[in-house]
Length: 338
Image (cartoon, rainbow, N blue to C red; front, top):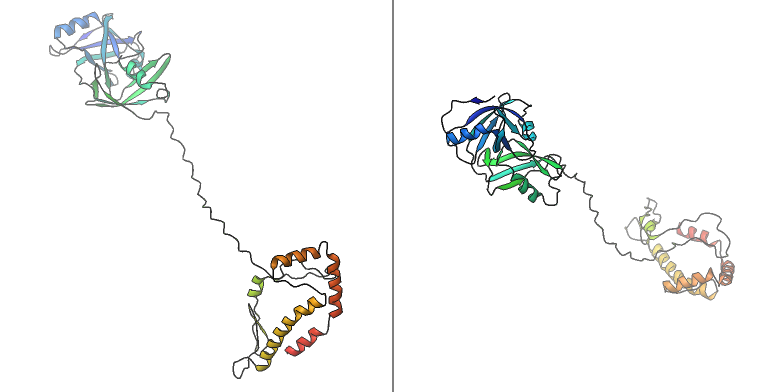
């Protein structure tokens, strides 16, 4: 059934019942022959573009015409247009001729990233959009490539909400696809600064080796090994009785409490002790109790030979040391220090 409007002579407006057409792409519809007569009679300028309205929902879009071969009172729309306009088979639609400005800008948003992942999405889009004569902001159009269907939302159009895209150069911008997922942010690992390895200063440490007896017998009790760091941390402070003070590097003599200066007796003791230390070296060497060297390397070699091929020499020196031993000497030293 066809309904004629009372609009002025240069405007075309008709109401038709709509059905799906054989067309799958583009937005051109099939109209009855009477529509062609009306357009010519009213002098509507070409290209013939129409405002398409669904009276039941108020949804508005735009379309062109492919041919005038449908039955009177009916128009045929592509299936995707029926879906976009929320039309059912046999629903009523209103068509009104309109003028649309040439489009200069479009912003499109594919529903899936499959479109942008094609080998040449630009060429595919240019080819399929040539089947459209106009586009309307808010519409969802369908384009085909082979057997694949791609749905695209029209987010923006310039210079107006609906534009004519027939034979026009139009700038096209793409929004991220609806199924696009931004890459997950990976927590950056804290950079560990590599500090330059400081060169260790080789320092001689007295009595840093394992304890051994000179006679080769096993050590009966554990022997504490003392190094420089331990010596520097030990400090036995003098009490009021004026006993020895053991510092980090030297033995400090007792002071005369009357003058605050070291007593003459203990200054003499220190001098004697130093002389005794100097005299001990030749005594040890001459009596076959040990060897002497100022070279750490040579000392290491001598000791290594004692616990290797020259083990007999070590035992001999141990026996010589026992012959020179004076067990009562320690008691005398303690007595003299009191």
